[in-house]
Image 1 (tube, rainbow, N blue to C red):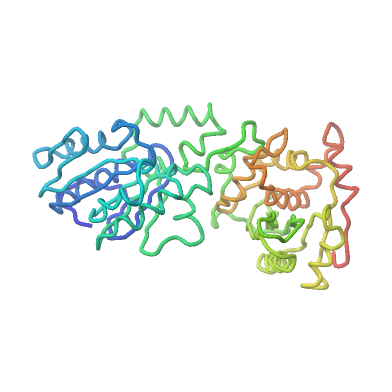
Image 2: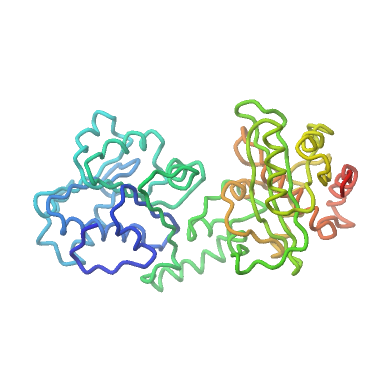
Length: 425
């Protein structure tokens, strides 16, 4: 990237300086994402006379909704106003270039053709961009050496921009960074006061607002993203594990669009804490999920597989044993709702007894949609990953989860009623 102005760039944003077709930055409030991209755009315009850029949002009812005001502020801040001509609807850049501002919702493939020769497309608040808009925009900005920039605060793993850049197949020639307030050297005292207040006053939304976590989708969720974040550990913080369990929640069918098989690996540290280690969940035939579960067992050097048998009964065990005959299996048959099974496990998180080794976006999205009243996620989605997590952690912490009094007794009785130990364990 060409540069001519002496504009300081936070260390976390330095990867954005190298030429790249796709550049993305995601994270929470106060990270400096929008300010950094605005700085770089002004810098590029000065260094490359004639540069043309398009600043994009999904919906732009007026220029007040755009990044235009921020760019004007940056032009004045860097004392290059004499090189630019700020007009009502656009900005003329050095050498006769141009910066324009549009809402993609108002455009078609035909109307976007006028932007084919632009050098930069900057999509701000990209979490709102629809799949249709991405499909229209990406091939439109096609000039040799052109770049597509994106900044966003994630809402959900299914957001098209998240699927594009944080999914299993990000585009080639791309750089995507995570930036939050704690990586911003220009974070102000005023913002710190706001952050500290939200950490106390809005614990259920703090992770999304300030840490770039996916937005909670359920009011009264029994898990919250702040707790998950605060309990997250790195490899350096992991203790020796004295027991490892694979939890499996099998699907009832193997048709296209069927539920996933939840496959979650957890471990019990010598310090008495639980750790979520891997998410091997998959979709497919019984042979596929069974093979995946056994692979997870081997990969983690686990002690046992715990599998729910409400739907498939003994067939669940037999399917696993077709992969490996002497596999140690614990079968669980429950008679109560998912949320009642999940509540005691969620309490362990609140007590600081369970940590996630890294991040598990799909699992955590399901966790924060489980409430005391039941599953509040999409009707066509089953919380299979959460169920697998619950089975595995209940096996690790039977004494803490199965209490002797109170409403949890029903859960205890149902769990003990269906918990069977089979050959090999």
